[in-house]
Length: 311
Ligand code: PTR
Ligand code: PTR
Image (tube, rainbow, N blue to C red; front, side, top):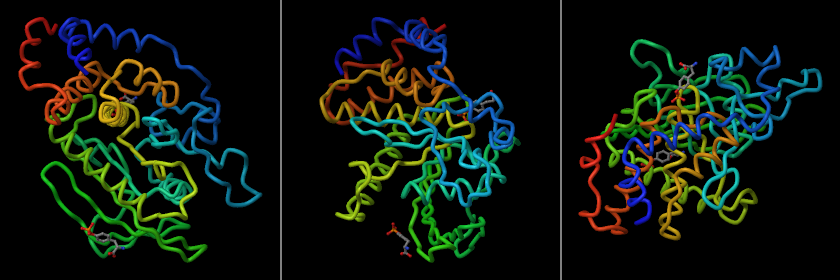
């Protein structure tokens, strides 16, 4: 991490910006054929944000009659630190895809949903209201019923405990829904420390959830994938996951590689991280975390000293 600090100081904001521009210029590494099929296009929130065929999440098809595209949802598996399928990065569900979204959550055994957008921002709808807003309410999403059990409100986020009921099997599961409130699209979180606290809460819940699954869990070692979404599922989602991966590696072996993490992520979810300040934020948040946890002394780093040549 000392090297990372040295790298940022050496490159200054301009250098980090160029590093990001370089990544941005690289073309996507695969095809988007499923996203482009005519019957799937209506399932994409944005016609220019598609998912790579190779890493897309497939839904199981409900009956034989359905055509071959009915397994489509705009969602991608992404690796985490030393873990494959650590995340599912997805777009904010559309009313048309609410049922598909809950089916994916069920099929992938998801216990945590991280939402980094608000439903409406600056007067524009960014994501559908795919869960019941008030405690005690139940919504019907076709094969699944979702009930809001309990809501906890924190300064920068809201944690909603949901109960997901499968109409066909009669089983019920608990899902934790984390809604981060202070992150505008194409922007960065108000403060790195709020984001770091948010991330550690999510991490704790994931670890507790994995414990609770116990020996019956036969899926990926770290537990079921965490669903992360914003509006398009690339900008804020990519930033959150990059940060999570970088911090996990820092905590494990004391080193960080933001650049390669983002490159690799883009091979699984194209266009992850949308702006250079989201990219730069990953650096500063990692450094802030390293300071808070004692990897580097407080005096080694000050973001302010880099302001001078920012443009
Ligand atoms: N099905 C659980 C229940 O009804 O208790 C869902 C739930 C889980 C509700 C946790 C509230 C919970 O709160 P906390 O995480 O604060 O203990
Ligand atoms: N076509 C949209 C646009 O550029 O406005 C696509 C888009 C929307 C891309 C939102 C990224 C967005 O941000 P996020 O992934 O953080 O929701």
